[in-house]
Length: 159
Image (cartoon, rainbow, N blue to C red; front, top):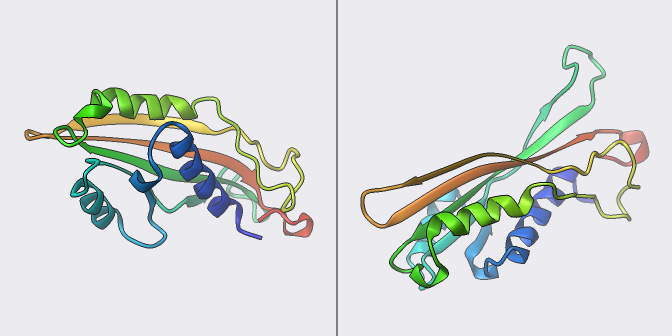
C-alpha cells in the first residue's frame, strides 16, 4: 500500500491532466528536482511545465499531545509558461488560474483497497495561496498549494 501522501501526489498529477494539461507537460519531483524539470519542459515545443512538489506532511490539531495523529499533507503546484512558445494555449494567467480553480472543492479518497472511506480521511482538498508572477521577458510563473488532512491509524491500515 502506498502512503496517503504519495497517493495524493498521484491524484494531483492525474487531476492536472484531467484539467486539460498534456501528460508530457506534468511532472513531479519523485525523479528530478524542480529547476531541472522546469528548464527541460520550457525548452520543449510546448513551452509549458507543471511541476508538483513532493508532499510535505505536518501534524495538525493538538500537536502537544504525544498521541496526536492528525496530519496535513501538502504539495506545491508550479505552473510556468514561456508565453511565446505557449501562445496557442491562450493567456498564461488564465491557464494557471483555471488549473487552480479546478481543484477548489474537489474530493480526494485513498484507494478502496487501501482504506475505507470514513472520518479518518477528510477527502476535502484545500486549494490555497494562488500566487502568479511574470518576469521581464516572456515567462509567466504561478504557484499554489493543495492539501488534505488525515489521521494516521496504523491499527486500521491508514498511513
